[in-house]
Image (cartoon, rainbow, N blue to C red; front, side, top):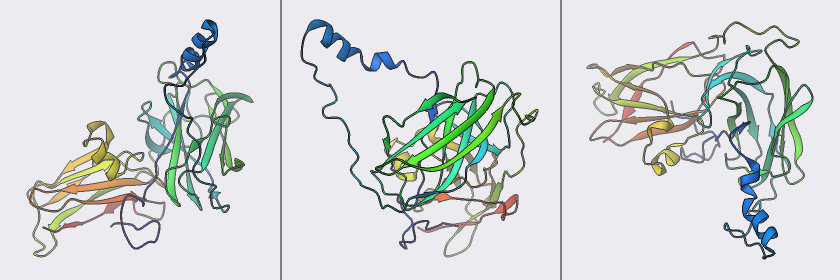
Length: 294
């Protein structure tokens, strides 16, 4: 039920994935440089209010790999939630997710993404890479969204880079609207997994009525949720066990995407597992019984 994804024998916050996504209309870049512009206009020396610029703290392992990209429908903006696997996107799509596996990564090394539509750059971090902080291996995804007017129709191409030299790791293409592949009328529900089960006492095996089961957004680990003071916006799905300890999640979980499960009952230790992943080899109705200890 709980996976040790990095193979160190301990299930903790190191067994995780953190999606980082792009957006089209969320920033006005000129505002980010406004203090610099004002300094130049006044003839004064510019001093960054943020101190020294952040630099990558790791050279990387040199053996980084990213797996093939799988496309998913998504919803939301900066809190992008993965839904169902798709081969193309309908007109009016407001968010799209590209999921991939990774290995050989080192926290602190640079990585970047670049999105184009019909050959024109739409979003890129290649000129200002971010630091990787998703651990050495696992599954994650990145989102592109435009919640106001939707994604422009066309043929989309994504490239993902990693390492000090920003080596191209993986790339993929997908269509939004009337591109070279027909778009479905609505995202497919195929591949979603419904998780259900029973919560019981680890010693007596008696059911635990009222047990609370939280599934966090793939971008959130238990440690992060705790740091966020258990914010409701970090929760992807929630269920409460009935009088017999039985539960069923109301939301389907996407395949090949890591989710954090947290189980709570008053008087028991909080039980959690980061980066739990379901694949096409799992049944679409997946029973996961949970045991809690005092």
